[in-house]
Length: 382
Image (cartoon, rainbow, N blue to C red; front, side, top):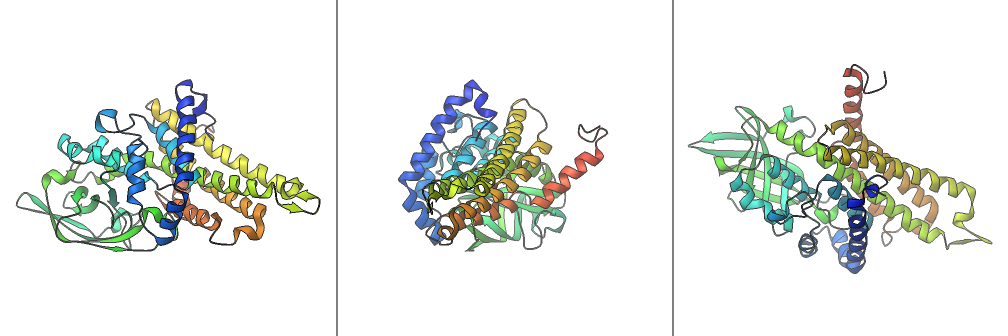
């Protein structure tokens, strides 16, 4: 669902080709993807294949191995990943954004091309047991020592934390919040795979840093500027979250409609009943509204405008739309959806994870409220 993006002649044909290509990829590899999802296993070969096809590097210029696109292409790929239950490149896209915005030439040479092509797997070590959205509670430390930095801390809920080649480690230095690109083969790093309920193709892990020594050249951005690096990436990556949520809602509703359209109830099929039709109408409308908000944010980014409010709004609407579409799917399929060999519960669990990833619904609401209340015209209401 790309109501505004598809109106751009420069994008329309590419969107159609991408939808077709990723649908075929999902159909070809459906069995492998489902087995890996059940096993809580990262399918690295399929991930690398998506990279080879260009679908892991939407934000990276072609000379660095990427697609050479922008936020609009990133949004389309993310939505189709959700629509077809593919292994997500969301974490890779965030790594690309960090490197493009803050990386040195040396860091780009070392990491960017591989992340864009899937040869290098990226993760981000941010969350801690008692520090999620509040960096003030972060306990991880970065201490200068003879020109190097010594990193210590425990991170949790790290997507691809046990499967990555490089991670972005956030810690508190004397100057404040600072981040580092860390080679995961360095001594002092331990990982433990955890079992999240959703997004199990990019499984989570706990990651422990015990006096890991890195050179100053591993630092991403100036010391103490970690919040700036975080915001520059997450204001964009929320569109990836929103897009995957829209894709998951599309997937759930489309599969349910295929089933309900042939499911006999007396002389009718399920979709003949007005109550069911209203449920479908409401779910479709919610997905369309979320898509419009997401498209608006992507287009605004292309114009160089501030998109923080737009991406936050898009994610809030996408959460609600995905949940409504998933609920509608259960109304359409009934008992058929109550088994693990149908995809509906996996979709629900993926939605629950994405509802939290990049900022929960409550954080979205807090940000929107502050923007409205602190604006002289209440963000256009006056």
